[in-house]
Length: 74
Length: 496
Image 1 (cartoon, rainbow over the protein chains, first blue to last red):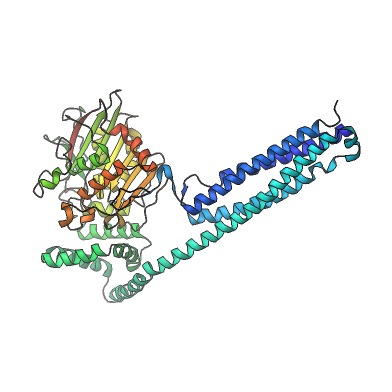
Image 2: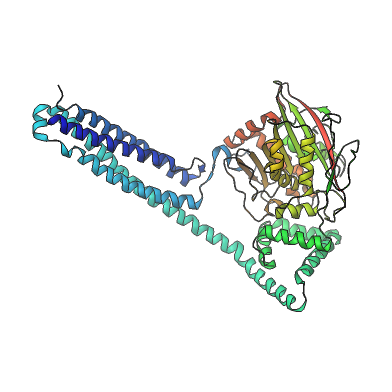
């Protein structure tokens, strides 16, 4: 029973991680690479930094998924 | 942006370092960021509750350490996502506010630049309307009167001409305003439509005649039916003369100053010559074949600017009829003639071609880069223009464009549009340097002034310009590279 619940949590965490990575990827594509100028550069850098932090969050979710998947296993 | 000490900075836009953001892109980014913030908040909630299905009682009994790790990981991810949601929302708000501020500033500038001339235009338009009630064909009369005014201005005493030119040169934005106002006065939609109207009316009145162009090799006319574009140098090499490739962008423009010469003039050489000496003969086009040490072949085509201020179809095809036709976007004899010269020079598929032009030559060069007929047989890779109104011309993607403009040069403003830099098109705007050309009618438009500016481009460390120079390298002087030159003369045949 614990193993089954762990697997379900792992699946949810993995799904959430995937969606977070998709969002990060979406953000990476937002600023056109042709932009220059203080405002555009600042906005572009902020968006890319957010994207990187989201990737870190997705990694945390994947680690949690791994831990959840091992629950109840010998 | 880069600039040499003690000189006006080169304002570089486009190319490797990109372009400024457009307002509609800022608007789209603000919306996308707001959406992302919402999605991020939703994911934060899901991350925190992902472990909700975990049956804590049995799981804690089985493996309390693992449960703690799972909950900590989900909480960590949820916290990051929550904070990022807030950051994205505030970035979205900042971007939206910036777009609004830019928009307000542009509106203020537009009001100043366009508002007053529009009032004047409205009054002029009323006047034209009154004429049309009294006299059928008022617009042709207006055109003829305008042409007469031009002739009058040209025949006016030198002090009068000088006074007028000084006033115009001192207020280059007046050219923008005039170009914007003209369509309103004539009741047309835009500058190109106005030019087409003028071309039509000019043709009807005989003032502007776009006649067929003959292409002949320098030093030996090639026969053919009058009234058609005639090929030259069928053997592809008979009139080729050995020389050296141009040195840098400055060398390219300097060579274009003197297409009659078989060599690249020394820096400043033209400044010491009497007026008119060693200048391009009317209608001359120079085609250089550059061969690298590795045997690779590249071609450079030098297209001269306006040489004929009449447009009656009897002199050089680089005339006023071509100017109007180029702005109107209609095929011109000079464009067909240069395309023929390129093909007949012996360009083979896959060999890169660079088109270089000052003033009208830059317009022709830019149009040729997109000419389907030429592109079928020639691989146009790059265009260099100096003082040319090319803002509204868009070569195909992948064609490198370097456009040089002096702030106080009136000519680049004549198409009524602002330069539009992008990844392939680098626009360099700077103040015109001082020099012997200061006595020219419009000093900032002098090809000599653009040679000096091109020298600064050659020395610039701006990443966009460095990238452009790399693109131009196959066409320029380098270790082991050789060059042969072919020249042709384009002449109007005066047959309709």
